[in-house]
Amino acid sequence: MALKKSMLGFSTDSWIGSQEKASGKKLGHLFYLQGAKNSWKKTLSQVLEDWQIKEIAESPSELAFYSTQSGPVWAIMAKHPKGAKSHSGLMDRSEYTAARDLISLNIPKVLSMGLDQLQIHFEGAKNSEIMGGLVGLEMAAYRFNDCFKETKRKLPQLKLFKGGKAYKDKSIQRATHLGVGTNLARHLVNLPANELNPKTYAEFLRTIFSGQKSFKVEVWDGNRLKKENMGLHWAVGKAAEEGPCMVHLKYRPPGSSSKKPTAFVGKGITYDTGGLDLKPAQYMRNMKKDMGGSAAVAGLAYYVLKEQIKQPMDFYFAIAENAVAGNAFRPGDILTSRKGTRVEIHNTDAEGRLVLADVLDVAVTKKAKDAPGLVVDVATLTGAIKATLGSGVGGLFSNSDKDADKLLKSAQQSGDRLWRIPLIPDYKSQLNSTPADMVNCGDGFGGAVTAALFLEHFVGSLPWIHLDIYAWKDKPGGGCMEPGGSGQGVQSLSFFVDSNLK
Figure 1: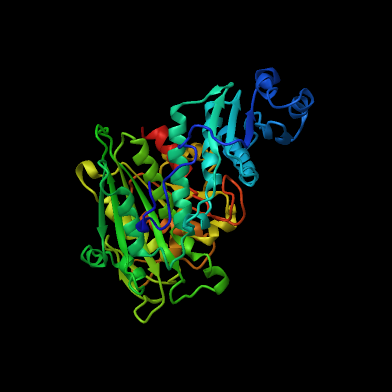
Figure 2: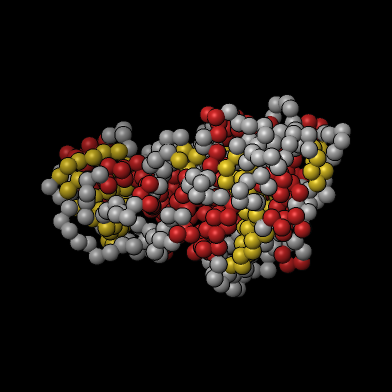
Protein backbone atom coordinates (compact mmCIF):
# COMPACT_ATOMS: atom_id res chain seq x y z
CA MET A 1 0.00 0.00 0.00
CA ALA A 2 1.10 3.57 -0.60
CA LEU A 3 2.34 5.68 2.27
CA LYS A 4 -0.26 7.84 3.96
CA LYS A 5 0.39 10.79 6.21
CA SER A 6 -1.75 9.22 8.93
CA MET A 7 0.45 6.11 8.75
CA LEU A 8 3.30 8.20 10.19
CA GLY A 9 5.81 6.95 7.64
CA PHE A 10 4.99 3.26 7.97
CA SER A 11 4.23 1.07 4.97
CA THR A 12 2.80 -2.43 5.11
CA ASP A 13 4.64 -3.31 1.90
CA SER A 14 6.65 -6.50 2.40
CA TRP A 15 10.03 -7.52 1.05
CA ILE A 16 9.46 -11.28 1.20
CA GLY A 17 5.82 -10.97 0.15
CA SER A 18 6.55 -9.22 -3.15
CA GLN A 19 8.73 -11.63 -5.10
CA GLU A 20 9.06 -10.65 -8.74
CA LYS A 21 10.59 -12.07 -11.85
CA ALA A 22 14.36 -11.75 -11.59
CA SER A 23 16.06 -8.94 -13.45
CA GLY A 24 19.55 -7.49 -13.50
CA LYS A 25 22.88 -9.25 -13.47
CA LYS A 26 24.22 -8.90 -9.95
CA LEU A 27 23.26 -12.09 -8.14
CA GLY A 28 23.87 -13.37 -4.60
CA HIS A 29 23.10 -16.65 -2.82
CA LEU A 30 22.24 -17.33 0.81
CA PHE A 31 22.07 -20.96 1.96
CA TYR A 32 20.49 -22.22 5.17
CA LEU A 33 21.73 -25.77 5.61
CA GLN A 34 20.55 -28.60 7.83
CA GLY A 35 20.89 -32.36 7.90
CA ALA A 36 23.54 -34.57 6.32
CA LYS A 37 26.09 -33.08 3.94
CA ASN A 38 24.92 -35.28 1.07
CA SER A 39 21.43 -33.75 1.27
CA TRP A 40 22.68 -30.30 0.30
CA LYS A 41 26.01 -30.96 -1.45
CA LYS A 42 24.40 -31.10 -4.91
CA THR A 43 22.81 -27.67 -4.59
CA LEU A 44 25.94 -26.06 -3.12
CA SER A 45 28.14 -27.57 -5.85
CA GLN A 46 26.44 -25.26 -8.37
CA VAL A 47 28.25 -22.27 -6.87
CA LEU A 48 31.03 -23.63 -4.58
CA GLU A 49 34.07 -25.87 -4.93
CA ASP A 50 34.34 -29.20 -3.10
CA TRP A 51 36.87 -27.80 -0.61
CA GLN A 52 34.51 -24.99 0.29
CA ILE A 53 31.63 -27.40 0.84
CA LYS A 54 33.87 -29.54 3.05
CA GLU A 55 34.96 -26.47 5.00
CA ILE A 56 31.33 -25.52 5.71
CA ALA A 57 30.49 -29.05 6.88
CA GLU A 58 33.49 -29.27 9.24
CA SER A 59 33.64 -25.71 10.54
CA PRO A 60 32.59 -25.05 14.16
CA SER A 61 31.26 -21.67 13.01
CA GLU A 62 27.63 -21.25 11.98
CA LEU A 63 28.44 -18.64 9.32
CA ALA A 64 30.62 -18.70 6.19
CA PHE A 65 31.11 -16.33 3.27
CA TYR A 66 32.69 -16.86 -0.17
CA SER A 67 33.19 -14.57 -3.14
CA THR A 68 32.64 -16.63 -6.29
CA GLN A 69 32.16 -16.20 -10.04
CA SER A 70 28.44 -16.77 -9.41
CA GLY A 71 28.37 -13.87 -6.97
CA PRO A 72 28.69 -13.62 -3.20
CA VAL A 73 27.66 -16.73 -1.27
CA TRP A 74 26.61 -16.83 2.37
CA ALA A 75 26.24 -20.21 4.06
CA ILE A 76 24.60 -20.84 7.43
CA MET A 77 24.87 -24.14 9.29
CA ALA A 78 22.90 -23.68 12.52
CA LYS A 79 23.98 -25.68 15.55
CA HIS A 80 20.86 -26.71 17.48
CA PRO A 81 20.97 -27.80 21.13
CA LYS A 82 20.47 -31.48 21.90
CA GLY A 83 17.45 -30.91 24.16
CA ALA A 84 16.78 -28.91 27.28
CA LYS A 85 19.62 -28.67 29.78
CA SER A 86 17.83 -26.52 32.34
CA HIS A 87 14.81 -24.30 32.92
CA SER A 88 12.60 -26.90 31.21
CA GLY A 89 14.06 -25.70 27.91
CA LEU A 90 12.39 -22.29 28.17
CA MET A 91 15.68 -20.46 27.64
CA ASP A 92 16.86 -22.71 24.79
CA ARG A 93 17.25 -21.29 21.29
CA SER A 94 14.52 -22.76 19.10
CA GLU A 95 14.99 -23.74 15.45
CA TYR A 96 12.78 -20.81 14.43
CA THR A 97 14.91 -18.41 16.50
CA ALA A 98 18.21 -19.70 15.13
CA ALA A 99 17.10 -19.25 11.53
CA ARG A 100 15.61 -15.81 12.17
CA ASP A 101 18.66 -14.44 13.95
CA LEU A 102 21.35 -16.02 11.77
CA ILE A 103 19.76 -15.01 8.47
CA SER A 104 18.99 -11.48 9.63
CA LEU A 105 22.57 -11.12 10.84
CA ASN A 106 23.80 -11.47 7.25
CA ILE A 107 21.33 -9.08 5.64
CA PRO A 108 23.20 -5.78 6.29
CA LYS A 109 26.19 -7.16 4.37
CA VAL A 110 23.88 -8.47 1.64
CA LEU A 111 22.20 -5.08 1.22
CA SER A 112 25.54 -3.27 1.12
CA MET A 113 26.52 -5.09 -2.09
CA GLY A 114 23.88 -3.58 -4.35
CA LEU A 115 22.57 -6.94 -5.59
CA ASP A 116 19.80 -7.13 -8.17
CA GLN A 117 18.65 -10.52 -6.93
CA LEU A 118 19.15 -12.65 -3.82
CA GLN A 119 18.44 -16.34 -3.97
CA ILE A 120 17.59 -17.92 -0.61
CA HIS A 121 18.11 -21.69 -0.46
CA PHE A 122 16.70 -23.77 2.40
CA GLU A 123 18.38 -27.17 2.30
CA GLY A 124 17.23 -29.83 4.78
CA ALA A 125 15.47 -27.15 6.82
CA LYS A 126 12.29 -27.73 8.79
CA ASN A 127 9.17 -25.62 8.31
CA SER A 128 9.87 -23.78 11.57
CA GLU A 129 13.33 -22.81 10.31
CA ILE A 130 11.98 -21.55 7.01
CA MET A 131 9.35 -19.53 8.85
CA GLY A 132 11.99 -18.04 11.16
CA GLY A 133 14.31 -17.25 8.28
CA LEU A 134 11.61 -15.42 6.36
CA VAL A 135 10.59 -13.36 9.38
CA GLY A 136 14.28 -12.55 9.90
CA LEU A 137 14.51 -11.28 6.31
CA GLU A 138 11.51 -9.00 6.80
CA MET A 139 12.76 -7.63 10.13
CA ALA A 140 16.31 -7.08 8.87
CA ALA A 141 15.13 -4.96 5.94
CA TYR A 142 13.44 -2.37 8.20
CA ARG A 143 15.23 0.93 8.82
CA PHE A 144 13.35 3.69 10.62
CA ASN A 145 15.01 6.63 8.90
CA ASP A 146 14.41 5.14 5.45
CA CYS A 147 10.64 5.32 6.04
CA PHE A 148 10.81 9.10 5.61
CA LYS A 149 13.01 9.32 2.51
CA GLU A 150 11.52 9.98 -0.90
CA THR A 151 14.12 7.77 -2.56
CA LYS A 152 13.87 4.33 -1.03
CA ARG A 153 16.71 1.89 -0.55
CA LYS A 154 17.04 -0.66 -3.28
CA LEU A 155 16.23 -4.12 -2.00
CA PRO A 156 17.28 -7.07 -4.18
CA GLN A 157 14.48 -9.14 -5.63
CA LEU A 158 14.06 -12.39 -3.75
CA LYS A 159 13.80 -15.91 -5.10
CA LEU A 160 13.14 -18.67 -2.57
CA PHE A 161 14.15 -22.30 -2.98
CA LYS A 162 13.79 -25.49 -0.96
CA GLY A 163 15.59 -28.65 -2.00
CA GLY A 164 16.69 -27.00 -5.21
CA LYS A 165 13.12 -26.18 -6.28
CA ALA A 166 11.20 -22.91 -6.17
CA TYR A 167 9.55 -22.55 -2.79
CA LYS A 168 5.90 -21.52 -2.79
CA ASP A 169 4.06 -22.17 0.43
CA LYS A 170 1.50 -20.52 2.70
CA SER A 171 4.27 -20.01 5.25
CA ILE A 172 5.54 -17.14 3.06
CA GLN A 173 2.27 -15.31 3.62
CA ARG A 174 2.27 -16.04 7.36
CA ALA A 175 5.88 -14.89 7.70
CA THR A 176 5.03 -11.72 5.79
CA HIS A 177 2.21 -10.91 8.19
CA LEU A 178 4.31 -11.68 11.26
CA GLY A 179 7.34 -9.75 10.01
CA VAL A 180 5.30 -6.69 9.03
CA GLY A 181 3.36 -6.84 12.32
CA THR A 182 6.63 -6.93 14.26
CA ASN A 183 8.03 -4.03 12.24
CA LEU A 184 4.81 -2.08 12.79
CA ALA A 185 5.34 -2.36 16.55
CA ARG A 186 9.00 -1.35 16.15
CA HIS A 187 8.04 1.67 14.07
CA LEU A 188 5.48 2.92 16.59
CA VAL A 189 8.05 2.72 19.38
CA ASN A 190 10.66 4.52 17.24
CA LEU A 191 8.37 7.46 16.49
CA PRO A 192 9.25 10.54 18.57
CA ALA A 193 6.61 12.02 20.85
CA ASN A 194 6.28 15.16 18.72
CA GLU A 195 4.87 12.87 16.00
CA LEU A 196 3.16 10.11 17.97
CA ASN A 197 0.80 11.53 20.58
CA PRO A 198 -2.61 10.33 21.81
CA LYS A 199 -4.41 11.97 18.88
CA THR A 200 -2.12 10.77 16.09
CA TYR A 201 -1.86 7.30 17.68
CA ALA A 202 -5.64 6.91 17.58
CA GLU A 203 -5.64 8.14 13.95
CA PHE A 204 -2.95 5.60 13.06
CA LEU A 205 -5.04 2.75 14.45
CA ARG A 206 -8.13 4.02 12.63
CA THR A 207 -6.20 4.12 9.35
CA ILE A 208 -5.18 0.48 9.58
CA PHE A 209 -8.28 -1.12 11.06
CA SER A 210 -11.28 1.02 10.05
CA GLY A 211 -13.23 -0.38 7.12
CA GLN A 212 -12.02 -3.92 7.78
CA LYS A 213 -14.94 -6.35 7.77
CA SER A 214 -13.80 -8.14 10.91
CA PHE A 215 -12.99 -5.03 12.97
CA LYS A 216 -15.03 -2.37 14.70
CA VAL A 217 -12.99 0.62 15.86
CA GLU A 218 -14.14 2.74 18.79
CA VAL A 219 -12.28 5.72 20.30
CA TRP A 220 -13.16 7.16 23.71
CA ASP A 221 -11.87 10.72 24.01
CA GLY A 222 -11.32 12.64 27.25
CA ASN A 223 -14.98 13.52 27.66
CA ARG A 224 -15.97 9.87 27.31
CA LEU A 225 -13.28 8.83 29.81
CA LYS A 226 -14.74 11.28 32.33
CA LYS A 227 -18.28 10.09 31.59
CA GLU A 228 -17.14 6.50 32.23
CA ASN A 229 -15.59 7.60 35.57
CA MET A 230 -12.10 6.61 34.40
CA GLY A 231 -10.49 8.94 36.92
CA LEU A 232 -7.08 7.25 36.85
CA HIS A 233 -6.68 7.34 33.07
CA TRP A 234 -7.95 10.93 32.84
CA ALA A 235 -5.66 12.20 35.61
CA VAL A 236 -2.51 10.80 33.98
CA GLY A 237 -3.16 12.39 30.58
CA LYS A 238 -4.99 15.62 31.31
CA ALA A 239 -1.86 17.84 31.53
CA ALA A 240 -0.73 17.07 27.97
CA GLU A 241 -1.58 19.18 24.92
CA GLU A 242 -3.37 16.16 23.42
CA GLY A 243 -5.58 14.58 26.05
CA PRO A 244 -5.87 10.87 26.84
CA CYS A 245 -8.02 8.40 24.97
CA MET A 246 -8.87 4.72 24.81
CA VAL A 247 -9.02 2.84 21.52
CA HIS A 248 -10.96 -0.43 21.30
CA LEU A 249 -10.60 -2.76 18.32
CA LYS A 250 -13.37 -5.34 18.41
CA TYR A 251 -12.49 -8.34 16.27
CA ARG A 252 -15.33 -10.68 15.28
CA PRO A 253 -14.40 -12.46 12.03
CA PRO A 254 -17.03 -14.18 9.88
CA GLY A 255 -17.46 -17.77 11.01
CA SER A 256 -15.66 -17.20 14.31
CA SER A 257 -16.13 -19.75 17.06
CA SER A 258 -18.45 -19.39 20.01
CA LYS A 259 -15.53 -19.28 22.43
CA LYS A 260 -15.28 -16.35 24.80
CA PRO A 261 -13.12 -13.60 23.32
CA THR A 262 -9.58 -12.99 24.51
CA ALA A 263 -8.89 -9.38 25.47
CA PHE A 264 -5.45 -7.83 24.91
CA VAL A 265 -4.74 -4.54 26.70
CA GLY A 266 -1.68 -2.37 25.94
CA LYS A 267 -0.11 0.48 27.89
CA GLY A 268 0.18 3.42 25.51
CA ILE A 269 2.04 6.23 27.27
CA THR A 270 3.32 8.10 24.22
CA TYR A 271 5.81 10.02 26.38
CA ASP A 272 6.60 9.77 30.07
CA THR A 273 8.29 12.68 31.83
CA GLY A 274 7.51 11.03 35.14
CA GLY A 275 5.01 13.82 35.86
CA LEU A 276 5.69 15.98 38.89
CA ASP A 277 7.94 13.18 40.17
CA LEU A 278 10.16 14.13 37.25
CA LYS A 279 12.58 11.58 35.81
CA PRO A 280 16.30 12.46 35.59
CA ALA A 281 17.25 13.58 32.08
CA GLN A 282 19.20 10.42 31.23
CA TYR A 283 16.17 8.27 32.03
CA MET A 284 13.75 10.45 30.08
CA ARG A 285 15.40 10.46 26.66
CA ASN A 286 13.95 7.15 25.46
CA MET A 287 10.57 7.55 27.09
CA LYS A 288 8.91 7.69 23.69
CA LYS A 289 9.11 3.90 24.08
CA ASP A 290 6.71 3.86 27.04
CA MET A 291 3.93 2.86 24.68
CA GLY A 292 5.78 -0.33 23.71
CA GLY A 293 3.16 -2.59 25.27
CA SER A 294 0.40 -1.08 23.15
CA ALA A 295 2.69 -1.28 20.10
CA ALA A 296 2.93 -5.04 20.65
CA VAL A 297 -0.87 -5.22 20.82
CA ALA A 298 -1.09 -3.23 17.56
CA GLY A 299 1.37 -5.58 15.83
CA LEU A 300 -0.58 -8.59 17.10
CA ALA A 301 -3.87 -7.10 15.89
CA TYR A 302 -2.36 -6.57 12.43
CA TYR A 303 -1.22 -10.22 12.34
CA VAL A 304 -4.66 -11.43 13.45
CA LEU A 305 -6.33 -9.28 10.79
CA LYS A 306 -4.15 -10.53 7.94
CA GLU A 307 -4.32 -14.17 9.04
CA GLN A 308 -8.10 -13.91 9.64
CA ILE A 309 -7.89 -16.09 12.72
CA LYS A 310 -11.32 -17.49 13.47
CA GLN A 311 -11.50 -16.54 17.12
CA PRO A 312 -13.13 -13.47 18.68
CA MET A 313 -10.69 -11.02 20.24
CA ASP A 314 -10.62 -7.49 21.63
CA PHE A 315 -7.65 -5.12 21.53
CA TYR A 316 -7.58 -2.18 23.93
CA PHE A 317 -5.12 0.73 23.92
CA ALA A 318 -4.76 2.84 27.08
CA ILE A 319 -3.26 6.00 25.54
CA ALA A 320 -2.00 9.13 27.29
CA GLU A 321 1.02 11.39 27.65
CA ASN A 322 2.34 11.88 31.19
CA ALA A 323 3.25 15.57 30.98
CA VAL A 324 4.09 18.35 33.45
CA ALA A 325 1.77 21.37 33.71
CA GLY A 326 -0.18 23.33 36.28
CA ASN A 327 -3.05 20.85 36.09
CA ALA A 328 -0.91 17.71 36.37
CA PHE A 329 -1.91 15.18 39.00
CA ARG A 330 0.18 15.30 42.17
CA PRO A 331 1.75 12.99 44.74
CA GLY A 332 -0.79 12.72 47.54
CA ASP A 333 -3.83 13.09 45.28
CA ILE A 334 -6.60 10.54 45.76
CA LEU A 335 -8.19 9.42 42.50
CA THR A 336 -11.24 7.25 41.93
CA SER A 337 -11.04 4.50 39.33
CA ARG A 338 -13.80 3.23 37.06
CA LYS A 339 -14.03 0.21 39.34
CA GLY A 340 -14.72 2.55 42.27
CA THR A 341 -11.39 1.94 44.01
CA ARG A 342 -9.87 5.08 45.55
CA VAL A 343 -6.15 5.26 44.80
CA GLU A 344 -3.67 7.44 46.67
CA ILE A 345 -0.83 8.65 44.44
CA HIS A 346 2.58 7.95 45.94
CA ASN A 347 4.49 8.58 42.74
CA THR A 348 3.31 10.18 39.50
CA ASP A 349 5.95 8.16 37.62
CA ALA A 350 3.96 4.99 38.37
CA GLU A 351 1.39 6.11 35.82
CA GLY A 352 1.22 3.13 33.46
CA ARG A 353 -0.61 0.96 35.95
CA LEU A 354 -3.16 3.75 36.42
CA VAL A 355 -4.21 3.94 32.76
CA LEU A 356 -4.15 0.15 32.52
CA ALA A 357 -6.33 -0.23 35.61
CA ASP A 358 -9.22 1.74 34.14
CA VAL A 359 -8.98 0.12 30.73
CA LEU A 360 -8.70 -3.35 32.27
CA ASP A 361 -11.96 -2.60 34.06
CA VAL A 362 -13.58 -1.79 30.71
CA ALA A 363 -12.37 -5.13 29.32
CA VAL A 364 -13.37 -7.34 32.25
CA THR A 365 -16.86 -5.85 32.73
CA LYS A 366 -18.07 -6.69 29.22
CA LYS A 367 -21.22 -8.81 29.32
CA ALA A 368 -22.77 -11.79 27.55
CA LYS A 369 -20.95 -12.82 24.35
CA ASP A 370 -18.40 -10.02 24.78
CA ALA A 371 -17.30 -11.18 28.25
CA PRO A 372 -13.65 -12.27 27.93
CA GLY A 373 -12.39 -15.72 28.83
CA LEU A 374 -8.81 -14.47 29.23
CA VAL A 375 -7.23 -11.03 29.58
CA VAL A 376 -3.61 -10.33 28.59
CA ASP A 377 -2.04 -6.95 29.29
CA VAL A 378 1.31 -5.84 27.88
CA ALA A 379 3.27 -2.92 29.30
CA THR A 380 6.67 -1.32 29.66
CA LEU A 381 5.73 -1.09 33.30
CA THR A 382 8.77 -1.18 35.58
CA GLY A 383 12.51 -0.65 35.57
CA ALA A 384 12.62 -3.40 38.18
CA ILE A 385 11.90 -6.06 35.56
CA LYS A 386 14.87 -4.99 33.44
CA ALA A 387 17.08 -5.01 36.54
CA THR A 388 15.93 -8.59 37.19
CA LEU A 389 15.82 -10.15 33.71
CA GLY A 390 17.76 -7.74 31.51
CA SER A 391 16.40 -6.20 28.34
CA GLY A 392 15.96 -9.42 26.35
CA VAL A 393 13.51 -11.35 28.52
CA GLY A 394 10.08 -10.11 29.58
CA GLY A 395 8.47 -10.81 32.93
CA LEU A 396 5.25 -12.82 33.00
CA PHE A 397 2.78 -12.71 35.89
CA SER A 398 -0.45 -14.70 35.93
CA ASN A 399 -3.23 -16.07 38.09
CA SER A 400 -3.66 -18.99 35.67
CA ASP A 401 -0.98 -21.69 35.54
CA LYS A 402 -2.51 -23.26 32.43
CA ASP A 403 -2.49 -20.08 30.37
CA ALA A 404 0.91 -18.98 31.68
CA ASP A 405 2.50 -22.29 30.66
CA LYS A 406 1.07 -22.01 27.14
CA LEU A 407 2.41 -18.51 26.65
CA LEU A 408 5.83 -19.42 28.07
CA LYS A 409 6.08 -22.25 25.54
CA SER A 410 5.08 -19.90 22.70
CA ALA A 411 7.68 -17.39 23.88
CA GLN A 412 10.46 -19.99 23.74
CA GLN A 413 9.44 -21.23 20.31
CA SER A 414 9.25 -17.71 18.89
CA GLY A 415 12.53 -16.47 20.39
CA ASP A 416 10.57 -13.73 22.16
CA ARG A 417 11.39 -15.01 25.61
CA LEU A 418 9.46 -14.62 28.84
CA TRP A 419 10.06 -15.77 32.40
CA ARG A 420 7.36 -16.25 35.01
CA ILE A 421 7.62 -14.33 38.27
CA PRO A 422 5.31 -15.06 41.20
CA LEU A 423 2.49 -12.87 42.43
CA ILE A 424 3.60 -12.89 46.07
CA PRO A 425 0.49 -12.28 48.23
CA ASP A 426 2.49 -10.93 51.17
CA TYR A 427 3.67 -8.00 49.07
CA LYS A 428 0.13 -6.64 48.77
CA SER A 429 0.65 -4.94 52.12
CA GLN A 430 3.02 -2.50 50.37
CA LEU A 431 -0.04 -1.10 48.58
CA ASN A 432 -1.99 -0.33 51.77
CA SER A 433 -3.22 3.25 52.22
CA THR A 434 -4.73 5.00 55.23
CA PRO A 435 -6.80 7.70 53.47
CA ALA A 436 -7.69 5.55 50.41
CA ASP A 437 -8.20 1.93 49.37
CA MET A 438 -4.67 1.51 48.03
CA VAL A 439 -1.60 3.38 46.83
CA ASN A 440 -0.33 3.22 43.26
CA CYS A 441 3.13 1.92 44.17
CA GLY A 442 5.07 0.52 47.09
CA ASP A 443 8.19 1.90 48.73
CA GLY A 444 10.10 -1.37 49.12
CA PHE A 445 11.75 -4.00 46.97
CA GLY A 446 9.90 -6.18 44.46
CA GLY A 447 8.61 -3.28 42.37
CA ALA A 448 7.63 -5.43 39.40
CA VAL A 449 5.65 -7.74 41.69
CA THR A 450 3.77 -4.96 43.48
CA ALA A 451 2.96 -3.35 40.12
CA ALA A 452 1.48 -6.65 38.94
CA LEU A 453 -0.46 -7.01 42.20
CA PHE A 454 -1.90 -3.53 41.68
CA LEU A 455 -3.18 -4.58 38.24
CA GLU A 456 -4.52 -7.88 39.55
CA HIS A 457 -6.90 -5.95 41.81
CA PHE A 458 -8.67 -4.60 38.70
CA VAL A 459 -8.96 -8.03 37.04
CA GLY A 460 -10.38 -10.02 39.95
CA SER A 461 -10.63 -13.78 39.46
CA LEU A 462 -10.77 -13.70 35.66
CA PRO A 463 -7.90 -15.63 34.02
CA TRP A 464 -5.22 -13.02 33.40
CA ILE A 465 -1.64 -12.65 32.18
CA HIS A 466 0.50 -9.55 32.65
CA LEU A 467 3.65 -9.01 30.56
CA ASP A 468 6.20 -6.48 31.81
CA ILE A 469 8.52 -5.82 28.85
CA TYR A 470 11.32 -3.48 27.70
CA ALA A 471 10.31 -3.12 24.00
CA TRP A 472 13.71 -1.70 23.00
CA LYS A 473 17.02 -2.88 21.57
CA ASP A 474 20.06 -1.01 22.88
CA LYS A 475 22.12 -2.67 20.13
CA PRO A 476 21.34 -4.82 17.06
CA GLY A 477 20.24 -8.42 17.57
CA GLY A 478 17.28 -10.78 17.53
CA GLY A 479 16.31 -9.89 13.97
CA CYS A 480 16.64 -6.14 14.58
CA MET A 481 19.56 -4.70 12.65
CA GLU A 482 19.49 -1.27 14.31
CA PRO A 483 18.96 -0.06 17.88
CA GLY A 484 15.45 1.08 18.72
CA GLY A 485 12.04 -0.50 18.99
CA SER A 486 12.28 -4.29 19.17
CA GLY A 487 8.70 -5.41 18.59
CA GLN A 488 8.92 -7.44 21.80
CA GLY A 489 5.70 -9.32 22.48
CA VAL A 490 4.41 -9.55 18.91
CA GLN A 491 5.96 -12.91 18.03
CA SER A 492 5.31 -14.62 21.38
CA LEU A 493 1.67 -13.50 21.37
CA SER A 494 1.21 -14.44 17.70
CA PHE A 495 2.56 -17.94 18.38
CA PHE A 496 0.25 -18.11 21.42
CA VAL A 497 -2.74 -17.11 19.29
CA ASP A 498 -1.83 -19.64 16.57
CA SER A 499 -1.31 -22.51 19.01
CA ASN A 500 -4.10 -21.90 21.48
CA LEU A 501 -6.80 -19.66 20.04
CA LYS A 502 -7.25 -21.00 16.49
